[in-house]
Length: 203
Image (tube, rainbow, N blue to C red; front, side, top):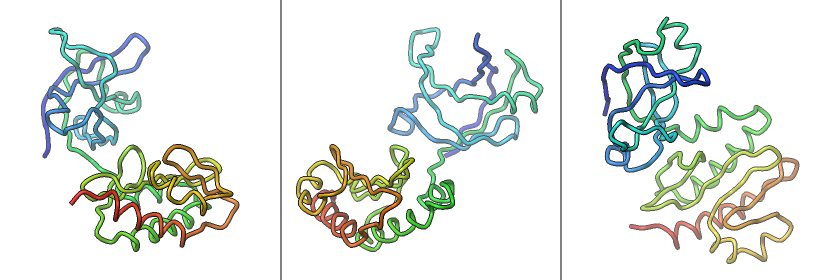
């Protein structure tokens, strides 16, 4: 669904700027932060609708979309000027996420992606909580690139079930770290993903 409206450009004391999104995003999208593709007078921008503590005059939550200084310069708009805003929800694909990462880590991410995708072919691919996600009625398993490792997030119960096989890897509540300078245990990741799908999916 596309939302289109005209609104004033708001400029804050620190120089940042935004436009108000005049709908309750929890009612419209079912969540409190939404990734969107927006256009400001036709100039494209990919970002998020968020609540940054701004309130409407009646005290209700005000949801906003930031407007970059570079875009304001292109528009030649200042505080109080009217902008035509077009907004629609945008969800990054897993492949788009991988392609945004450093070149040396991309092959490893693709290996993990293909391993999980093969292990849980009936799961839906999503981008959730800032991570590639496999979903079946609920989140099944995530993975993400970090500075020195790739994180795989199967949940705390899976960490307990596979504790013996995960010796030698750093784990925390629901997360496993696979260092970038070590071989990736793809068979183990496949086994964990399969277990997560069988035990955590919601049909």
